[in-house]
Image 1 (cartoon, rainbow, N blue to C red):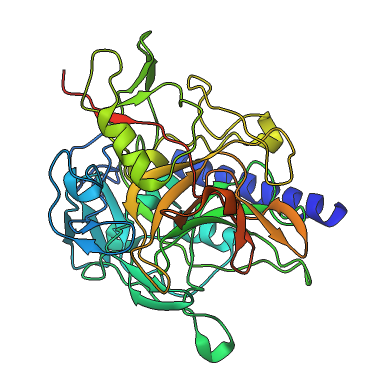
Image 2: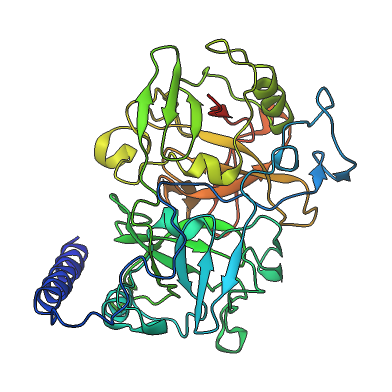
Length: 416
């Protein structure tokens, strides 16, 4: 615990020094430096929090690809039925990529793995493309780049979960003992709690295996800084910030994303097919165009300042109401995983799992101990169906909890 506290203190002092350095440099900039790029130069005039689509155009059942689905069909309501904001990028031929949906500009090539502290310094000192307002992305900004047209088979990469026509995405170095999937991209979002055995943690997105998880900032055995990839960005500083309004009718509007949400889940766990049907048939506040949110829509309402261990709440704004559950060992104070409409292509049968977001702890069982292994707000996947009496189960190297019968929070697009 003492080592964990010292590591947190070192990280906090380092970030304070970086912020003071940036502020000092900004205050002392020459007023005649009119030729420098302004923060919004060469960026689309976009504000707010527009959600980029998952780019999925294929239809799936519980176990296979299927033909196009129409309203009333089983499994209707998944990603391919609601396309959303199609990804749109421009390669600026100067090491930067512009996203025309979000108004963000990205670093094309991340280079080598570096520590969290090194990434903050790199962004503060970078002049990539002639710009000096680079930053390390939040997990919501970073997740805007994920595409669920990717596919992975356990530890082995097949297709990346990012557009490699524009972005360079490395694999883990198998020659040094890494797995191909050991190529996570860290964000600036620190977990407000800890994972594993009290590890200070930062959230990252894995564009090789299509997940959000929390990763320790320091190696437990040596105390040395852990290293990951970082992709810098600039522009649209409003991205990832919600603007919730309680409509007083059982719905919540987010005027940043243009989405309306079901305020309270109905307290019922369902498999994936049942969840799609429930959302399609929901009538709430005189609206009948509800749907099951895709992975990126649902992740947009995670509140990464909250967790069961730090705020005694789910990782979502308290304007929402969320059913509390017991964990697999019967302990109170946990919150459900929530289904999305997004199939996650992984495993022996790549069509058999769908994405969920954990609004409670991202629990797993390691060495016989149930613990928070990936953090509240992580994104993983469950089998789409199974015998309700056979779950929960534990799966993978971190013993991820599998419920299969997950909860639902429906969404609709604000059209009025």
